[in-house]
Length: 192
Image (cartoon, rainbow, N blue to C red; front, side):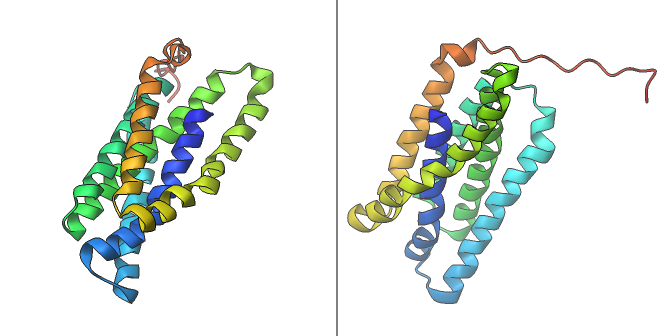
């Protein structure tokens, strides 16, 4: 749940500052800024959906690997955004962030599911859903306030630090290391 909360904070921060960041980095405002921000969000969403619908089913990864790769790719995408000199680079940053989120979310959702007993599944699912939005309560402090007070890159550096901690957690957690995910049974050749 701590991982899920941190991911929610990072999602809130990156969403909140992307429009401002795009305006400041590219020197655009008004309608043009709204168009470019919308394009970035569309690329992010497309990458996330593609990851979850087309890539994830082909990967043989358990919750630990999904959480580590997801947070790592998100951090890489935020790093690209920090350095992005152009709209193209900002769109690549959004695509990589979408890819990371597309791995991280199923990772912690699956991790929460396999960490509890069958009779606790409903409670775990409820906590996952609640935690998905909880970070948005705190992200304005890191996003908007830090952006205006300390500069446009500061909220993104904070996001990278949180994501690095999330990646380390996923890699060193004994509880995640001990999760064994059952492999799906091989297809039955007699049942098309």
